[in-house]
Image (cartoon, rainbow over all chains, first blue to last red; front, side, top):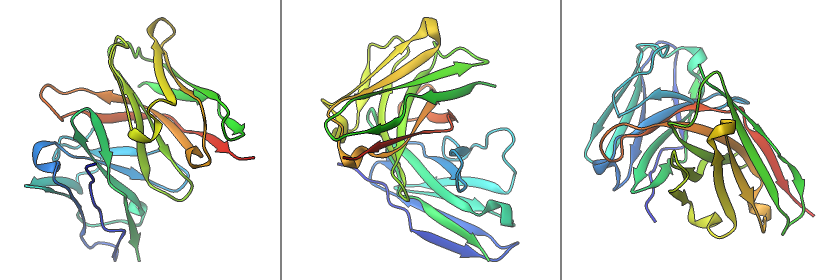
Length: 106
Length: 123
């Protein structure tokens, strides 16, 4: 079965840029979505169609896609951004979630 | 803004059954593709099942095929997950979610999530 892979953790200092990658052989044929999940809360959509930001999501969140790798970038990371981040793609009619990346803002 | 609320969770013995419900308020679900996603304690998100608007098309992760069945009742603005032959590894927080469809393949995304309902399978 297909998979999407994310690094388990990313650490940055406040104000720095946090970069999350998501790779998989299905990403080249699929838009990628990204979800933020804070402890004890439900996931929240932060990027859809690889590059689009839902209303209410700060401009510091951006997404890009190149070949089989999708990237989520948080510019000027704030302590409130500390959370788990999941990428999501499609394999035909099946949904693929990455394993998630934990962001620590030191 | 739509709100999704799950119900029906709890503790069940291995081999038992449970039926989860997801009810929507403030907006109709009938024109949306909807889904169940689960998260085992301390683990990541795992997609479980999707159902199309008219209930005619359903898709499942391999781990639950033949044991779980998703359905919907658009008149009640609700959808369901019937879980049979439950296993310890099915223990998780189950989220219901709404999917926004975008023209073209592989463009869709989960735009709304419920708060989650806990399922524990244990003897």
